[in-house]
Length: 387
Figure (cartoon, rainbow, N blue to C red):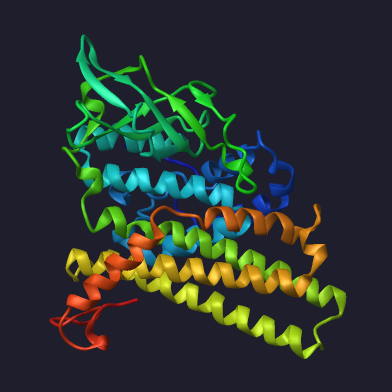
């Protein structure tokens, strides 16, 4: 890996993200179909160094990780999401996989897998599975054999390095594995008939019969669910969602300006309310990223804050959608209007798992906490946690 000199890794990651967002936005309409996939945009992520950027700097990357520089990572995720939420979803999964490898991989695994990222492989994290056909692993000659499927796997048939969870027996804690996949194999996208995020290549992946070396197993039992990083990592998809919210807001604002409706006080009032929602979401994401990266609060307190942050971003997104659609009116629901596609993608991507549980567990942590409301998210030894 020392011999590699990946192109543009020394470049400004934010500048690269802006360039990717601009080209992804221009292509997004053409990719908005059931068999769509932002292949050219993923190639841009590789060409501009963003697939390699999350690799630690000591191991050939740019160190664009949660612990090294969460603020910069949040901005990159936001920018990519503003260009295309489908691309943002894929890139967030790639970042998540590399974070887990950095956290739980041994030296040999890190060298091999980070080398794959530097070589342009797209990683993903696939955990969701049906109860009756969840992924299992069993010892076999030459390594471990997999059986079962993963569902709602974004990048199915396109991800070439998949981090998956599997169990030896139904009652066992899951293990993580990183498995190599050939493009276009083992994926079934036929069930992905969602109104939005059509270009995310989300589907079912059947890994039955795949044999991988034993060193494909990453970390120990249930490391995948270790807190605060399991729930706390939700700030990353919230950052991508924030980019989608900003894109909806900008399409709405542009429509009002082009239509000459900016002098209407009712339109201005709605736009002002939307601006409050967008900025509120941005501040929640920024603080959540900072709290997770600092790691100075107890894990349950960090998880509580991130749970609140993801719900605050969801609420901001729903508010902006309602305001924009009311403001633009029927044209915003017609195919070909930028707001129509952006609204479908955002409404779909805002649907993340277990929102009610996220809210009530956060509230339970707050109810049991001592001190004042102003101290809930502060480390008493070090003062307020940096945002």
